[in-house]
Amino acid sequence: MKFLDEAKIFVKSGDGGAGCVSFRREKFIEFGGPDGGNGGRGGDIIVEVVPNLNTLIDYRYQQHFKARRGYHGMGKMRTGQDSEDIVLRVPIGTQIFDEDKETLLFDLTNPGERIVLCRGGDGGFGNAHYKTSTNQAPRQAGQGWPGEERWIWLRLKLIADAGLVGLPNAGKSTMLAAVSRARPKIADYPFTTLKPQLGVVHVDEREFVMADIPGLIEGAHEGAGLGTKFLGHVERCRVLLHLVDGTQEDVAGAYKTIRKELKAYSKELATKIEIVALNKCDALIEEEIEEKAAQLKKAAKLKKGQVVHRVSGAAGIGITELMRTLLAIIDAEKAREAEEAKDKAGVEIDA
Picture 1: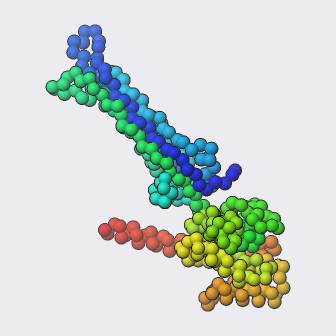
Picture 2: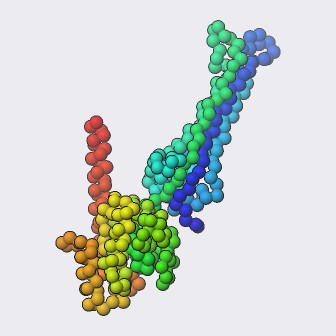
Picture 3: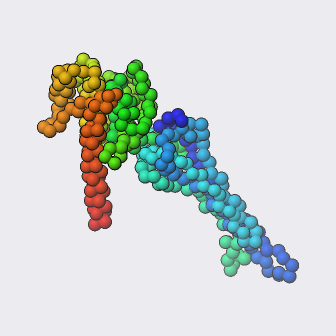
C-alpha cells in the first residue's frame, strides 16, 4: 500500500428534503384537511478513526464526498426518510485543517473516535405543520435547510512512542529491523527509506511503537534532500533515538547537523527527550569507539549520568539495554502526561 500523509478533499452534507403539500381526500370524509408530511434530514459527513490504517491513500483518488439530500415528505402524514451518512475512515493521528491549511479543526488521536464534520440539513415542514385555527387549509411547505460544505486538508502524523532520527545511512532501518518485525528496505546507499516505517518493539514482555523517519541532511529545512516532509511524524513521539554512524570521521558534526535541522523545523521538537547512540560499533576497534563516544558526548552536552550508547543494529550489540532505556523514558512520560491530564480535569471541574 502506498504511503500518503496529506490530502485535500471537498465534503458536503446533504440538504434537507422538502415538505409536502397534500390534502386528505377520501370518500365519506367531508373535512379532510391538510396531511402533507415533513421532509427527511440530509446525510451527515462523519470522520471515524480506524486503528488498522496508516495512510491517507484512499483520498488520493477520490476528493469529493457529497451526502444525499433527505427524501421528500408525502401525503397521509408520511415523513420523508433521512438520508444515509457518509463515513470517512482515517488513521490514528489524523489532523483536519481548514482550507487555509493553518486552522486546526480536529486532532484525532483515539481509536474509534467519531466526529461530525458537516451536519446534514433539516427537512422542510409539510403543510400539516402550518395548520392553525385561522388557517385550516395551508398551501405552503418548507423546502428543507441546505447542508454544509467546505474544503479541508487531512494531515497524518503517525503516533509512535519513539522516533529514529539521523543522517542517511546511519543505520536507522537496520535498527528498526533488529528490534521489531518491521521489514524496511535496507541498502548501502543514502535515502533507502523514502517514507516513515513503524515497528512494534518487544522488550521484557512489554512493547512500544518505534518510527523510522527518512534521513535528514544539511539544509533539509530549506528543502534539501527529502526536506522536512516527514518530520511531523516525530512530533508526537515521547523520545527521540538519535543514531550516529560510527564509521564516519566527524561524528560530532553529524550530530550537530541533525540537531540544527530539528531546531529549524520546530523548537518543540528540538526540546524532546533525546537518547544518543553511536551505531555500527561492530566495525570499530575499542580505541575508536571510546574516542568517538567522547566526541559525541561533548557535542550533545550530556549531563552527569547520561551516556552515549554504543550499539550495532546489524550485530545486535547493546540493543537490549538501549530498548530498556527507551521503555523507561516512555513509561515516565506516560505517567507525567496522565498526571497532567488529571490535574487539568481537576482544574476544569473546580472552575
